[in-house]
Amino acid sequence: MEAGNDAAVAIVLAAGAGRRVGAEEPKAFLTIGGRPMLAVAAGAAAASPAVGALIVTAPAGWEEEAQACVEACGVPVTVVTGGATRQQSVQVALEALPLDSKIVAVHDAARPFAPPDLFTAVVEAVSAEVQGVVPIAPVTDTVKQVVDGRVVGTLDRERLGLAQTPQAFDASFLRAAHRRAAASGVALTDDAAALEREGAVVVAIAGDPNNVKITTLLDLANADTRMGGTDG
Image 1: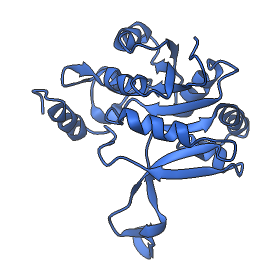
Image 2: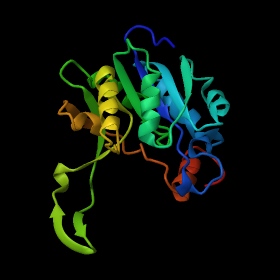
Image 3: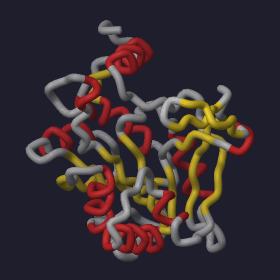
Image 4: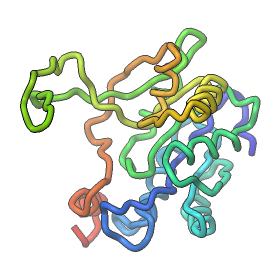
């Protein structure tokens, strides 16, 4: 796989089972507006001028379906078999990343509405001084801290944000940080956390309010309606 020039490689994670959606097939292969969610998400990544190639993780046995979803992306695509967890899938994809890759973006196929310009924005924000970039959506509700059912405090929402993907990173930093986290048995909820725990510089940029994550059946129905489908 060759990205060409200094373009980033985007990892698109599509190996999750999506049990909360309640479907028989993996979530990324469910259709919204008549297209597999993976095809929509990968197409957005490939449409960014900052992205030159894709690595897609697929569930075991779904590799051919994944390849079919991304064959029209217009950039080189490598499909790999994902792991049992999101963290393991990212590690597999990072091991498939060309060693000379400078910047990598990591995106969840379950966020099919991330626009191409968000991929561009996170990639372009990575620099010699900034090793990681995360799009953040503001917290609009009051946030309470609850312990054993009792409210014990109110958090300052001005200092809180909701992380989205795609997130972009210095490729060598992310690869090494993931390896060390795995060796230490550390569970990561997102990829920026791998760098945060090592003191690397991770910055926030504005997320996209439409960049929602498809988690439940209602989310799926809303996404289908948004794409002009008939199941919503």
